[in-house]
Image 1: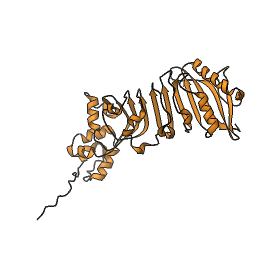
Image 2: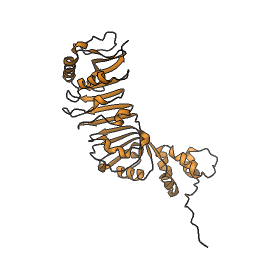
Image 3: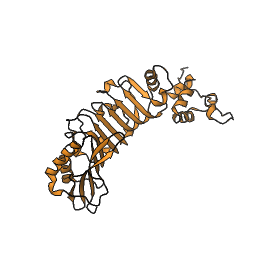
Image 4: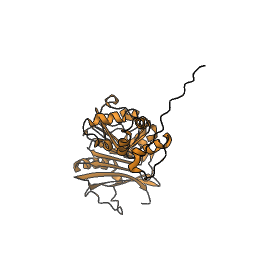
Length: 309
């Protein structure tokens, strides 16, 4: 008689001894795999690690269950996971890498990639489901998209901190809820901003030549933008914002306007503008001064409003 092989099943695990600190005093019945997986998936990461590390059967089950963490940081050769980092006293990055390897999905509120120029430099290939993506000192955020599960999109926030020129005309930049560029290359132009159809954009730490403000406004006039669209260009030095305002003044001098009735502390003695797009909307442009944590920031605001305002 021919023997028929049956699929190997993971054992039913009695978890009373492992979960006893978190359960009532009455002894529960053995917990089968589906409920066990559900409990483990949403258990606090530290508790989950302590529980599963004590039992080889639980470790096998644990490896098949998605993971939920708040913050994951990856750079060349290293992985940092706040929830686990304090549990390991030595070789922390290596132990975190080993613990995360082979997991099907890792849900991360905020993933940050630092100082890696290519996908090959990523020390650990994961499947991440994220809300926020931050890259710092990386040549192109698109290098890391193979690690981002499609269920992450559209992102809630994208922040790009880099020196190299950015091409902003990308579907992810178009669709992300909140986009922040922080640009450290003084003479590099950020390309494609005028093509963006997004309603909010913040560009931090920019210099005079990083943004072609005239080109952006001309595109808004030609192609229109939704009422409520707001772009914030943040300059470290006042003379940089002044140079941009001078460029705008040369191009749109006839549309200078005091913008009376708008409750904003405008930059003194700097031009302000009200530029019509169509019979129902217009662009208002002004400079203002805001205080960040440790310094003054000079902010140039482009905003599309109703002509009734």
